[in-house]
Image (cartoon, rainbow, N blue to C red; front, side):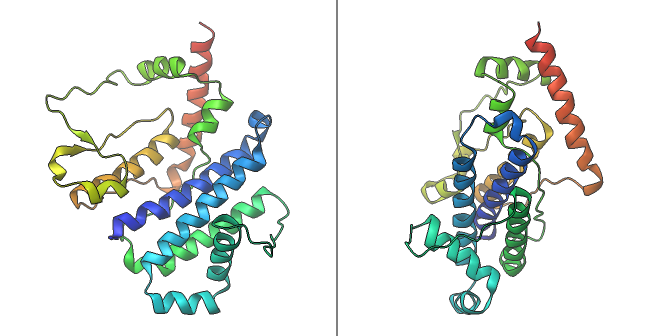
Length: 246
């Protein structure tokens, strides 16, 4: 794997933390869902993606030593191997006090993996946590496909892209092995309903663009501007309520 193919798995793991942040912040709005099952699915995806990053971002010798000597790495593979890739009868979960403790643990683990694999990752990569989950956000705010289409027409006056050429859509970095001519493909960059979703979408799109065209683009937001994401979400909810009450 090249550096951007590896980045895909790092960012996929990061988005699992984003989902848990959203669950913790909006638990009342989604409490009728099976929260335990959702969290378990996010944890499974988190640990499998981190192990893909470690397996391909470190030499076999270094990884072997870390698995023996490093407590964080040992725990990551323990969770993947004993619980999420398999269901071993001798698996013992380390119970945490609450969701916030779990999120802090996952952040520590992903940032540690980011550090140990940094030589194999692009220098421009950032980990930007946002309390957002695309599917749960739509459920919590009762956004149907019809309502979403109306929202996008209000939010984005030029939502439809007109292009004189037809391209195949490059949907996933793992598809690169099947691409014979990258000039036949294009990456769709979606705005999303909020800036949080827009940031996630743009980072995903950057990764796909870089894998497809061998480029080095990235999208991020500075810490001082993170409050803009929360303001934008509140503004979106206000717009949503106006449209619902028409």
